[in-house]
Length: 100
Image: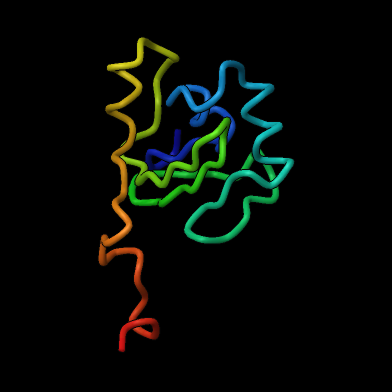
């Protein structure tokens, strides 16, 4: 993993947003994942620390900030160390042009 970046489908699987890597790739390819506000076009897209992902999986939409690349698909407590939930009022999601 160069500079802590990882394939999006692999990261989603390690972070337990999908039960299998195939399902993670399907989420991306069907347009249910955004990276930094832009729809992810390919499951091979590289993500890394600082990227903000919006994942519409199941009956919930999650907005998370990537903290680290995964090493393996471990238990849920280990997976939660890969990201942090982003709150709606988090200033990091508002661009300077959007402030006013």
